[in-house]
Image 1 (tube, rainbow, N blue to C red):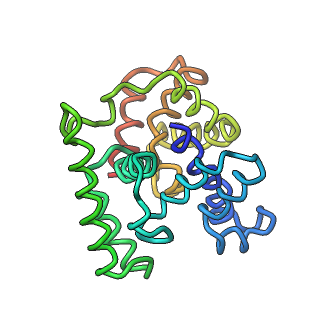
Image 2: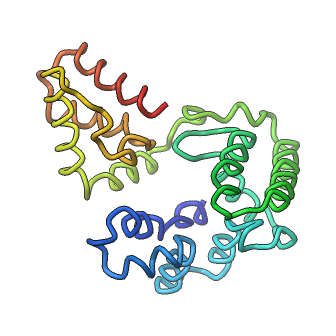
Length: 228
């Protein structure tokens, strides 16, 4: 659990450098380093346990971390959980289909490299679920239910950018009310994320209690269709 919670500590810095390079100090260096290197630097500064740091390094299995060194459950389980969850819970097959589309095309993986990683991942999945009384497909977005600390962390994640997020949503509502709504104007990375529904619900609860249910449903539907 400790590994999972800090494994992407540098991702926000990396994303901000990628999305807003003119506004982020030393953006080019951060982009070149990548989120894992940024994460390891942060963990070192925070004096995180070397065991946890090693488990975080193992997230690069098959890429920057040798498969042969994936020799403990503390390395295997966080890596498996990372593969299964993107913007939503997905199967290993979906994950590797996505890696093949994006990873091979950008040169991150060769096909042979990805094939070996995929083979190992499915073997790991079989080992994990041989010890459980559920199957991989039983793990879904709402099963198990998100614990309180995850809900709290999600709230913290959007808190700093809430003002700008709500401004985007407000403009969207205004344009849709004028029947001039153009979803393509909005930042794709804002739309294509796990927190679209989360921030829409937060906005409606805090900023637009007067809006009717039909209008709320229309906006949410448009966002979901655009993401799909």
